[in-house]
Length: 318
Image (cartoon, rainbow, N blue to C red; front, side):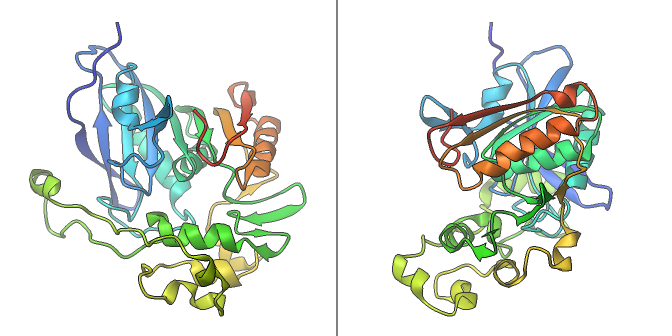
């Protein structure tokens, strides 16, 4: 019999090594009576939203109840600096490796945990699951990553920077819409009031909607306007941090060294199912990552790197 999920998630606050608290929703099966494997999903898109959710029969479903109904504990977390989480957001994922590691460490010490954690998601949440795999926490054992070929990397003799440039050419059409439409690029928004205890915030949080509304997609005429450096300073576009650096800094600029990097020597100890689409902008990176992780596996489990590519677009695989 499939276990039922508890009606409402429990809001928890996970401490990081530098004292910052990240907010997460915990979903548990009802009346499980045993220790559980945990599925961790870390997102910049609001832990209560369907963005990056599970696609079942063409419809998106929130991963918390979906996986809890299958018998797992599920932790869905707002990443650093987003929505209910503290700290400063880094669009280029400055803290994601260590924050992923610290979250797994917190999970394995909870009374409902059986000591094994996996990750999943599509696009940004899937990339964050891969960064957690790269942290090589021994309890983080597996990932199902969809549309996660993005990220800063240098291997096979080529440097690539988060899919922004190919052969030195800026991918304008892809990046303009991503910066404008996705809250992942926005860093100015309402935040949890300072000075409230976790208990006080829990009592009023349902009355607040934290986070920005994304700008509408850029029109073709807007994309033709020059100079490009002013693209995000136009009316109706949310102020952000990162566009100018993304546009003007070359992929080999030392500035990028502060952010996570996949290299020829990167190792993983988690098995990963890499899922992507032939019409995804970074499907080539996904194919290369699978081969790299298999070659550099830390253990037998890390050698289990699998690949599925389907004839669709970004995050449309089921």
